[in-house]
Image (cartoon, rainbow over all chains, first blue to last red):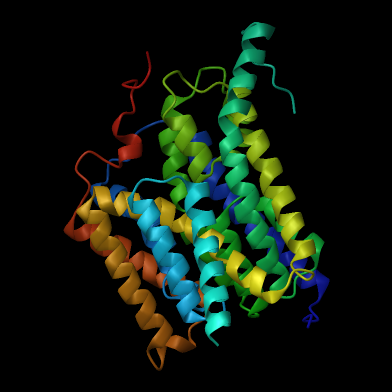
Length: 110
Length: 256
């Protein structure tokens, strides 16, 4: 079922997303030529990507497939392969494949 | 977009561009697949297909876009949207600063403003680890295929998201989380500090999700709070000694 949402609100939101994302990327790259000296800020920036990606994954991903068991199997498969140093594409595909397999098995059992 | 590079011969520019294209190919494959699931997510959340594609074409980032469409779909405020985009994409500032140390002299201010659009985790990773300084044609080549893959994948997912059976789209949603895991797990394996930070992120994120009052907070803010708390505690307890790995070799160590 499609949510009815004003197109104008979408354009405002899309513009905000584009501008913020672009400026955050381009301004430091364009302006900055020296090293960040503040140790805390430097460390904070270093940890941000891992913190963001982790916070986005757990627990949200467990509820992404409609079955927590299926999601858990997929995420576990991804974690094992990532731990063994597999690349982005392989890990992503493995998550889907394992979850697909789990869906099928649950379907057979149920 | 012109790939001419001031002062360099046409041949050099062409070979630089070609090398960038080659280096971007594996990234493009990954992006196609991941953005396909983003397209599906958009369709699931009730976005029109061109809305999802437009977001991909103007943002070129996974985490920020997911948080963005979720915030928009949940009716979040524009302020919340802007703040979540800022926090989630703040890492690109660090990458931009880092990359600015390893670009060729032909990359002038205006060019940086154009190339800055292409800084993503993977494109940055390839460019920053390049042994020779990054030139304009190289970076343009490097971002070309991933951009195409990201756009086309989103289109495919947004259009087919409604057609494919729910069991398939449900499972495919995991691809994007698989990518996150592929980035976080090796880093956590290598560094106990990163592992500690991710543990805090999980704890805070779960708290925000399950705790009675906190679970009322929207998804965008929950991610911001979790990430800022985890990264700040990590920076407070385990400050990075020589700066992030990304900037550790700046100043020409990786240039020949």
